[in-house]
Image (tube, rainbow, N blue to C red; front, side, top):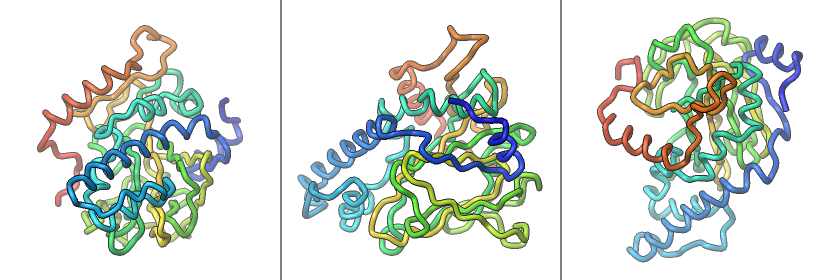
Length: 291
């Protein structure tokens, strides 16, 4: 299930490509069930400790974390891929449909970049402080990656709309090079004067759809103005012989024609390498930009 020449051409022209219905329930449901179980375990532990007054176990996946976080915001901490280290999430990283997309751009030697996230974007206001600011993915990597292409694959596991915080991109901005980033209260941000005078394009995506973009494409997220969680993955893939931009974190060879015996697709090893890296990389500076 690879892309057409026209789709690839559109990506390189605009810096992004939106694909509807690339994944189905069979692809998404294991991850939803995994994070539902993580939230349930935390809810029961917090309830036993008296930190929340209800389990909210009848709330749907998109609401339960919100209800719990209203009493204990810290319950939403440390849910990221490398922290939770769930097997369903690991299997998602090497989903053949996702790797097929990567192969359309980076070739047959595919490395899963360690800058990878699952995001539980809570409603703006009392719980969440704000949306992800304008940035380029190249801007959150060390300069070693500047000459190279890294594909971002952004995947909602619930419907993402204008109201719950879809992404906006600046079409064609990937052709204008890396812009200066500065730290804002919400994270790395491209100052207004560094942004091109091009109308941003909002990109709502239904669950099962996928948004691809270039590592130099400017993008940010809108506010989540609903009372639900916007759940999404952002994953990155590139040629296996390129640097990752986070050399102190582990990268994994997920597909290879020339070295099929070297694939790093064992779940236990994945967990062990992340545990080691997180323990011994404390204090590492992930960004090139001064705080």
